[in-house]
Length: 165
Image (tube, rainbow, N blue to C red; front, side, top):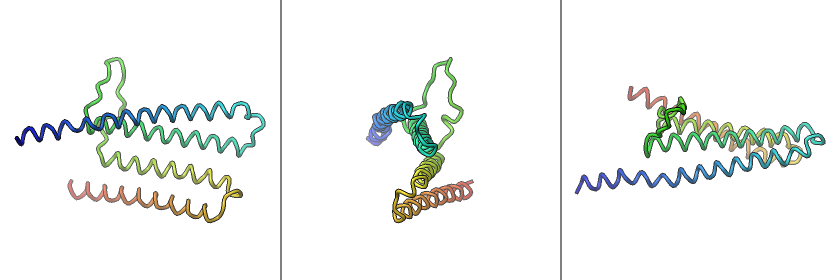
């Protein structure tokens, strides 16, 4: 009976599979949005202000950061919780695949959130004349919360590695 329960629990990891498929679909949607922004800016490129172009580029960077985060979570999560990804012989395996544990994924996600928040904050500052000081203040506070959280998680991870090493 105990072995059967263990097998059921072990097999339940496959319930994460649809989640990773959903993330892949989200990545497709993000890619569509990326190209939509590029296509929309092309007709206006010659009349657009430099700051307007910088805002568009920052949006593209933001999408790229989120996309990279999605890929990292999908691949690492699949390999950590479901099964090792087998690639065909002629395709190279990404060097970081199979090397990220849950803590390193968590730290990379936290770092990515800080980077994404930084891009949002920069976009906000570029339009600061149109945004209330109160909103800017709260965005900075939220960003600093992300930064402190990322540092805190990294510190805890470092201390736990030192303690268990």
